[in-house]
Image (cartoon, rainbow, N blue to C red; front, side, top):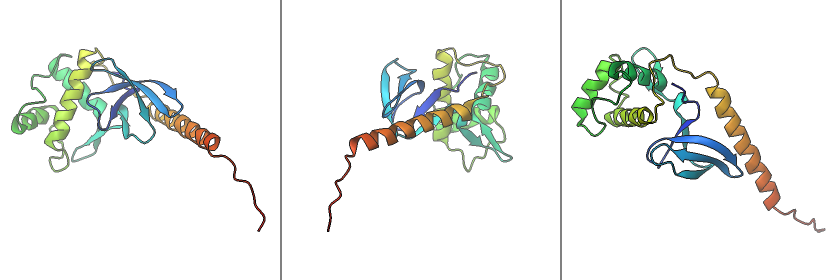
Length: 167
């Protein structure tokens, strides 16, 4: 399962694939409807490869949890919809990750996880294979650095130099 360039953007439904850099942010394509959007630097964006869920012993990467779902569901869609009531969602999630921290993982987190899994599964991005997250940190740093450099360059272009005056 390769999720290095899959993004979750706060305030936007679904998941997005990182396409390319722009001057003011980057271009992402929705995995739901294929629409392309530009995302500014101020948007809260998370790489799926960087997201984890709490367990009693450690933080478990989302990719590993999705792999466990793929193994349980034989790479098919989840048997429980993300729109089910909370007790059903929690019971299903306990089958996937028995030692999850119930105090810090909410039903809304489980709903989001199942929704994301089904989106990725529909696009064929889910597999039982070991997760591939080799360059996730490097990709994230590269994106952040490019955006910062472009923003700094844009800021210096827009701000005209003030003439010095004698007092």
